[in-house]
Amino acid sequence: MIAMDENDISFFKDGLRLDGRRADELRPVKIEVGILARADGSCYIEMGGNKVIAAVYGPREVHPRHLQEVTRAIVRYRYNMASFSVEERKRPGPDRRSYELSKVSREALEPVILTSFFPRSVIDVFVEVLQADAGTRTAGINAAAVALADAGIPMKSMISSCAAGKVGDTIVLDPMKEEDNFGQADLPIAMTPNGDITLMQMDGNLTPDEFGQAVTMAMKGAKDIYELQRRALVAKYSQISTDSAREE
Ligand code: UDP
Image (cartoon, helix red, strand yellow):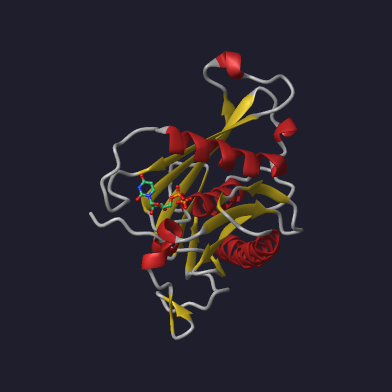
């Protein structure tokens, strides 16, 4: 394999990125709500080449019981990447990366979930990455937030997630795989529609100025994703209310 770094790659052609996007453009997003019959809430999301399913179960009894909290529900989040989701087959099962992503994703969602409504119970979130193209943690969080709403879990607000990165000395929104792998920085965030940030991570190097630009850009991306999450939920539930009105 040829070793490559950011100096070997041109990330722009005629002012546009390799997939034709402007620097501040998201990849196409598709969101479907309630796609799994046996989950309490579910969501399928496509963000560019990422294809991710989230399933929510609960609130339900905690097993093992010693994990119970007397005053609130606990939240568990399992991020899993299918072995066929990436170019080079991934060994099945949990690894350090999936433990980290599960932890930070849970922490991104937990602050908006009204866990005190359900003492001694658990809310389980399963995120399965079927196809990966950089940004699977953000896609997973977006799908999980919609699946939680679909499960009827009371939440203070939605959570939306997006990354910004730096490639060829330019700050770009929602990096795809080539930009993520060979770029100079990656900064995923998650936030409420009011702009309260619940996740921020950073790989690589940014100057304070670039950091400000990247955060602003990622927040704008998350805001746009929020609108798509909201529309997907409204589309599902307005359909249900139309159907039940017809039945009456
Ligand atoms: N990736 C891969 N194999 C792995 C882990 C990651 O090919 O075992 C790819 C995959 O496309 C992923 C990208 O590298 O989306 C970036 O991974 P990262 O750890 O930055 O997380 P993500 O951006 O997906 O949240």
